[in-house]
Amino acid sequence: MTTPPPDALRHLLAGLDSAQREAVTSSAAPLAVVAAAGSGKTTVLTRRIAYRVATGTADPTHVLALTFTRDAAGELVRRLRRLDLRERIEAGTFHSVALRLLRDRATAAHRPPPKVAEDRLRLAKEVLTETRLKVEPGGALADLDWARARVVAPQDYEREARAARRRGALPPGAFVEFADAYARLKRRRGVVDFDDLLHDVLTAMETDDAWAAAVRWRFRHVFVDEAQDLNPLQHRLLEALLGSRADLCLVGDPRQAIYGWNGADPTVLGRVEEHFPGVTIVRLDANHRCSPQVVRAGTAVLTAAGQEDASSSTRPDGPAVEVVVLPSAEAEAAEVAARVRALLHHRPGADLAVLARTNEQVKVLHTALTRAGVPTERSAGRSPLEVCLRAAYRCTSREALATWADTQ
Image 1 (cartoon, helix red, strand yellow):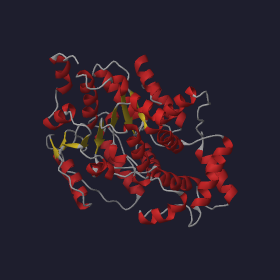
Image 2 (tube, rainbow, N blue to C red):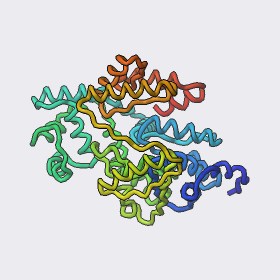
Image 3 (tube, one colour):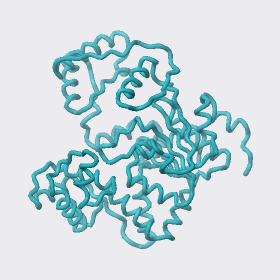
Image 4 (cartoon, rainbow, N blue to C red):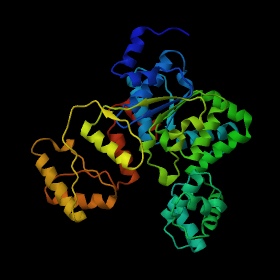
């Protein structure tokens, strides 16, 4: 292994605090980086990959970076290119990587590749019509997704759902009927859905030792972003990808888990020592994004919820966090519109964003802002085609467009 020139490493460590530097340069394997909000998680992840490649401890052609969204995968690749990592690493969601593996396996065996169902909702509607179950198709699919993410057999769903205090959409006794009918319909149509991709890769790795060895040879260095959102099925697949190796880096924060409704298990990272014995943990507690007032407010919320939080801010003081309680959604929207209008006297509209929890709230806010004469651009409720067209339009070069296309 050749030693890289000092300048090649200096720019990878520039601007990092001591904890970030430790996370980037640690030789530990496995490694878990527990990164609080605003602590530079993505910076650390990308610089660790680039640092390992630069020092010869990782071969970029054998790196796998797993993310939870296509946007995150694209951003990771773009940042690595800005760090002068010219070699193409494999980055994508669990589902996109699983689909690539299954397509490659099918090609090698001279079989047709898996065909992914284009409209699961339509399949669910057909099943519900056939079974005469009175439930919304989206709710039925949510129940099914939760069970499969938790690796729960259909006959065990109700017991496991009660244990998890989950209130499903399907009536008692109906889950097995729906799950079986849904599986039969997919077989008749010759299609799979996204969760099938993970199941099929896992099954293939557990039953085909030669193929499993080839996959592990291909992916020798594994990095996982947002590891707090791993569900048991993804966790099992991750363990299958690793085999007996320990070249793994997990990055995330159990306090930022957002996929519990879909079966995620934040204890994979929260109790990482139990899941990956011998793991080294590096904690990033410095928030470089938010003012002390915002960090203290967040810490108070976490503490009230029974979660420890040692976050601190490196930013200057800012205004106090204000909580405003209003009698209705319409009153809330009117107040927001008035405040936005006042702010527009001091800064351009492109600097302002209004966040809402649901699409219904967005509609009310949009109406109020329009009435107040505030031009808005809504990001909620767009069609998949519009989302793709807007994302492609934002690419400012052929390289950026190619990077975006490769991660879709």
